[in-house]
Length: 321
Image 1 (cartoon, helix red, strand yellow):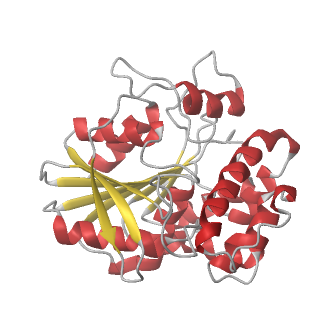
Image 2: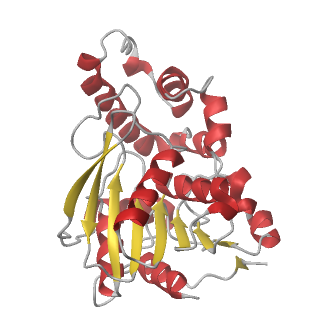
């Protein structure tokens, strides 16, 4: 019954509440640059993924997956990369289609359920890196993608795939979308929609007939955006169909490697459907930890090395046999 309670995380006294614990790490955390080496992975469909490596041919490799409208330059990616590299992992952090600073080539880009792209990254790592243990760490959208990938693969994953950790995951996308549409979360919704509008405007010249931007400024929430753009561009009927088919929660009990989900109770992005306690209680592999504090991809509180609790928690779980 791997429902882990209580959690060891305690928020700093100067960050009261989920909003402060979300915003402070995103805006004010200072993380040194990681000396990544970029590789462009050409895909069979004519598109590409930009992969960022920090590698010395070690026996352990971790693959990091970022959140919505982020990239491998996000502080939480660089912080996790530095912490795990310091402890003996090589690191592969990948940018989703259109997230590496250059528009991708196809009409589609990425979405919360794009586990097929993660699968290609994992396969590439298995073929090109000598590690005998490969771990996965995902954040928010990337965490949903990670858990979905593991559930889809079930018992078919490579024996070299060791463990996984996911933080702040909207594993029930419909529930999360409702939560984010609340007035108290307008600051996050406006930021996401602004970035997504910019991505579509950058694509428009290459696909003038396929992308209609009329009225795009009137879109105010994910239901409207996903109905209008995400779903049709990626083969879903509408937003509801996308959320249902892209959510990882229905697949959690199929996961067949040790996997830890850490979702803070005060995460402003997550509704009640994003705390799959029953699945964790029934599964021998899937673990849920739900600290009272932490915010969304927060878990602030650096130690002397500047590490956050999430980085130490991931290292501890991934180091287990």
